[in-house]
Length: 343
Image (cartoon, rainbow, N blue to C red):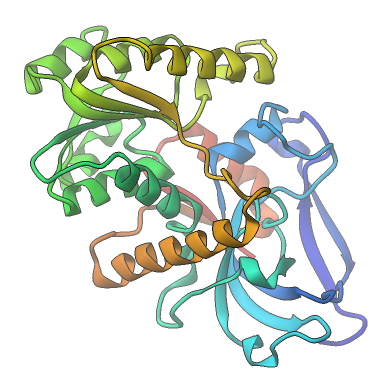
C-alpha cells in the first residue's frame, strides 16, 4: 500500500433518488489500533439501505454517510499491535454502514473468516442475511415436520430463510409476487401471491390447523393477519417494518406502535408468541458476546453454503461505480435474491 493510494466510496448525501448517490475519492486511511483495513470484494444492497435513503432506518447516521451493511474482502493492513497474520486473509463483517467502498476500516474483533474457495459475492449473500435467517429460525424452536409462512420469500433474507427451513425439515409456504413463484418452487417452497386478497384463506387451506411460525419483514396492517394464521403456541417473528416506507409517519413512532402491538398480544391466553427480531440486540451492552455469537453463526451459514445446503441467490452483480443503477434494480425487486456490488 503506497502513501498516495486512494479509496473510492459511495456517499449518501441526504434523502435523494438513487441517482443522487455520489462517488467520492479520498486518501487511503491507515488502520488504528484494533482495526483492519479491508479491501472490499463484495458488498450488498439490503432493504436497510433502501430505508436509509428515505431516512427511515432507526439509528442511522446523520447525512452524509457511506452506506453498506456488510462486506466480504481481504485484509490489507492491521493497526499498530495487530496480528500481522491477518494480512492477506479473506474476511466478512457486518458494518451497518461503510461497506459501499473499495476499502473499509473494520474493528478486528468484528471480522469473521471466510474460506478462500468461496466466491466473495456468493459469501456476501449470507453475511447479514444468512445470520438473520439462521438466528430467527433457530430462535423459533421449530421441529421437523412443522409448517412456516415466510413473507417476502423472494428477498435477500427470505431466500436464505426458506432454504434453512427446508434443510431443517420444515414445510415452507412463501408469499411473493407471481413472477418469483417458479424460482421459489425450485427451492421447495409452496408459493402464494402476496397481492391476492384471498391469501390468508389460501394459507388456511394449505395448513388448516394454522402455521407454526410466521416470519414477517413488512409489518403494517397485515401483521394482524400474520398473527391470526398461527397454530396453537405458534410464533410470529417480525424482522422489519417495510410498510413504514411511504407512510409519511415518523419511523420511530411507527416502530414504537408496532412493538407495543406485538408485545400486548403476548398477554392473550391463546399461547401464541409475538416479537421483533433485532439483529443488533446486545451489541452495546454485551459487545464481546455479541461479536462471538455473530462469528459463530456466520461460520455456520458459510459452512452450509460450502456444503450446498444454501444455494446463493444473487439477483444481479454491479460494479461500485454503477451503484445508482444497482439501487434502482434492487428496489424494483424484479429478481429474487440480493443485489451485490463488486468494487
